[in-house]
Length: 291
Image 1 (tube, rainbow, N blue to C red):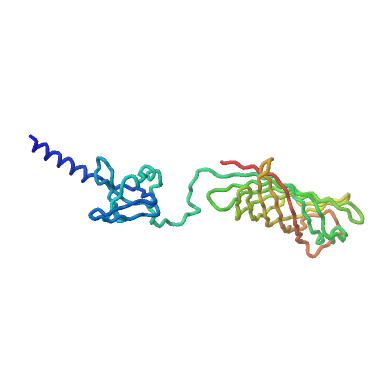
Image 2 (cartoon, rainbow, N blue to C red):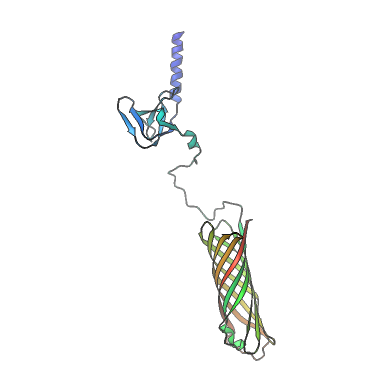
């Protein structure tokens, strides 16, 4: 009976040792390791990770040290110098450390939401109007006038914003004979690229193209209409304030005009196409949400 019990104990002990898996452990700094089959001991100054297996899985007093290839070394260490980190490692991402991943693709959709924002801007433009002096018998070089702008932009999973904008501007000046009032209403697509982002600030460069359904000038006795379109570039910065997101902008715009209708009977222009340039600065308010 005792012999059978001895045999069963051997089988049980062998099954424990055979099924014991290597563990990922941490060897503390200033640890003492010793040879398994010798008497030499060594002191490890720096802590390190290692693969290990208890010499006796029941009491777990000493651990055999394995190398990075999970092959047994000739050293063992006492459990007092070992920290158990197996549970901590399970919290780490299950990624292959030496795997090479392809570069990210901007066109790959990662979200079903779009970032949408509106901005309301007040511009102060300096419009160079000398090209119109022949029509209005003037020697005016430029006019400073406000411009009101509304922008609607969407940001999908791309590095650019795209959308549209509406602008309205009214100019007034007086020549030698009468007062002149010019109204400009324009709308069209716009694009912006964000090239700088800090914690509380973003900087964009953008371009736009606008059709002008209204581009007219009136005096007390005449009315002139122009067919026109406008294109331009601008630099914007958004920054956080106590009141919300504010914007500062600077823009350059080119107005391409063709005199299409006039009540003046004695007006003869060659050519009847003009280009007016403007430079402006603005301040505005921005709101955004997900769509």
